[in-house]
Structures are given as structure tokens and as C-alpha cells.
Length: 95
Image (cartoon, rainbow, N blue to C red; front, side):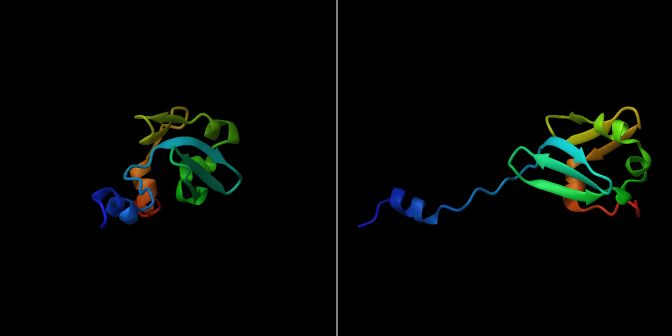
């Protein structure tokens, strides 16, 4: 005879996050990497973001993570990106 606890354990699934929150942002010559609090990392090409692509490496590093991780802001560049938009794969060149 099985108990409800045993049934729940057998139906347990891997953790599926419902919210992505940024923890850090890094750049190389061609890519932006956003690390999330749940361990995921999203890489996107800098060519999607002309302002960031044209910025100096020093300007790119001065990124502020706002709203507890829901947005990225570069005050020196007047550039803002939402994590939701990044995760949705918005075509930034067409926007």
C-alpha cells in the first residue's frame, strides 16, 4: 500500500524556475554573458545591441542590476535591457 508521501516523491520533478534574475554581467569582444541566480547563463551577441557594441570595455563593465535582478542599466550609456526581453530572445535590431 502506498502513501501520499510516496506518491508525491515518485512524481517529483526537477526544479523549474519561473523567474530569471540576473546576478552578474560579463563581456568579451563579441558576446554578453548574463549569469542568473539559479545558475543559468545566457549568452547573446553584442551586435544585437549597437549602443553596447560601440561602448568601450570600461563603459560596459559599469552595468547596474536593478529591480532585484529584472533589469540591466548602463548609466554612462543611457541603455536599459530587461531580463524578460533577453530571455524571450527579442530581436533587438528589428525593435
